[in-house]
Image (tube, rainbow over all chains, first blue to last red; front, side, top):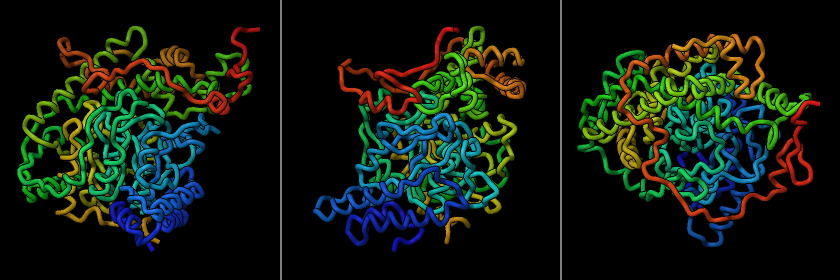
Length: 488
Length: 96
């Protein structure tokens, strides 16, 4: 039997040592999905037969005496924006109705090659646009800590699947916070790697200069283990970086003695929930107590990051989403007379309100007369945001902030006010603009709801994030808490 | 600052090939006006000497332009709403 709360590290060790089988672990995971997902709604599609077949292959390889792969038998859930050959990809949208991709994303291939078993595809805000998973065309996902609250977004299904103990690992994508924000709201670990770290071949693009794939886990140790398998150059993605991937597990035991943790206090002055701020101060104290040196840093342009982001990201989205036109895949409006009407009607029926809103905004900021005043100016402010971090990293090794300004909000609370929804990402967006890695780690509860500590690092220095995150989890027990919907 | 009206939304929706309902046009005009008012904060910054940043890559990514096999044509066409004779089929382009 596989106990609840088992980590990827623990499962891989036991399967690798043949103390249990990948098939048994997979059956246990599928059983938890069957019992728990009715109340959570994390999954859009469960690939039970495929999962059992790949688990048996892992077991056969081990029985044949092959060396144990690093993720042997580890169940994983995949955000439904990453392609798996022959399995529907919806992106949480009606416009991809019926689409089964003829190829598999490199990120999924790499996990499978490391012995992981894909359990299914998870719910998300349509085309990864949103901060609550309420923009899914199919159903909302509920926060395992409180079913009346959102799990965050856009990777809300992946975060909730790990929080509710259905899988120990899932993949999400993060364009402005879509891994770290739901990780914080669901009380799990979430990593947005450095821009270029993970191949995006087979990822449906939202904003190409910002999107990055990363893992959700319960522990920082597991995030390091998964990252070792996930990262690396891929010739099929022109933006994937030819940077060496270090042995991240070696960073875990280093401790934080002498590590400089920078806190941009003025950036945190306004709009942060008092309970979240209290948990953040305690987290900073815990790092100090473990030997870190806490220093003041400044991010003077960070409060312009949301405005900058919603110009840059929507501009890129308006271009990327032009491909959904009813010609090559997915839905086509049948009643249309000519080609132009077919495009317009397909897109009107196929896209939800938030996607349309962002296409309109992005097209506007790129349109004649507004391009310089909005798009080019935002690109310049993006440079200023990046320079802030370069200066901060002269004085510190990681920058610490709360991951989100508030705990999980109620379903429906922000759906009529897009700007309020956008502000949920105020602390996560700067790292995307600058291309930096960011890790969210659970740092305690605020009135029964989780809060997250965010650590942002230098480009390609995920190792220091794992070092600090593992030291924090070694000194605290917040990551061991189990939500109400994570039992039974 | 730019004010977003229903006419602005109509114009942009045409550029983006989006047919919108009357209700959507009004809602989007109001919401986009609010969002752009919020985004006005970046207009106050002096950016004259700042270069624009279009991506966060730390090195230039170039490769040899070497031909390689692409996806199987029949499998790609299987995903299309309408295909015939190895081509995507679309409604008529010109009126008639």
